[in-house]
Image 1 (cartoon, rainbow, N blue to C red):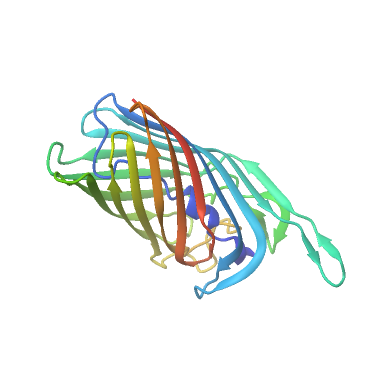
Image 2: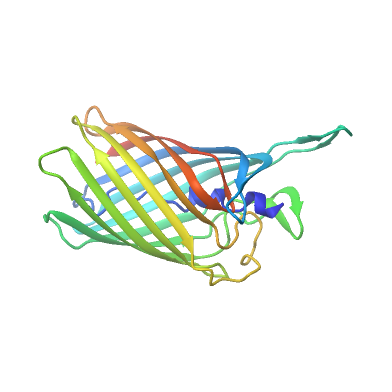
Length: 286
């Protein structure tokens, strides 16, 4: 039963937005967003990458994301999922008619704080390095549904991780396009496997305040953790992998306050829900 739930929270909570790419915030400038994300699925990528049917599970995450320029080169970053709700649907077994009750957990989630340093301010290619610390503030045991020796529903994995990410971004001069590439290594503790991560973004800004972007993310396990799935196990496990892609559209009519909508689809995966992750956000640019 644990395999059914591994990874879906990982996809949402640890895939922190890398808004800004290789461009750090200017001094005393910032970007702040209140976001709501939803995943609801009755299908799952198993260990072989095949899609199987599962009991419907859902994850609702309300979060704060912020970037603030300490200097023109140095930007502070925070991602705080301050309310995470995970649910498991009830199931009626036929022909017996027996009903397995649903379950839920509501809690704070694992939090990321980081610092970005811009190496090439004012240059054509913006290059930046981001160091992110993943704080295990989520719940590692919630609800009442058991799977072996662990609870199924959780909002955190109980491990402290550190990720080093490098972004390179370029804004075209003759057309309103920009692109960003990023690579990173995520070091995970407590027996979890480390990860290699990759990102790509292509954005289009046809008018002032409107941005349409295509985003692609990839996470690949280095398979160097405990075979048992790491401390805590439950819904968070080792060696979760995925390739996700999708659009994000944002619009700030007055240049400061705006709204964003997004969707991310898992083209392939391992221990991962095979359903889209939808997002809605309200943001403010300082």
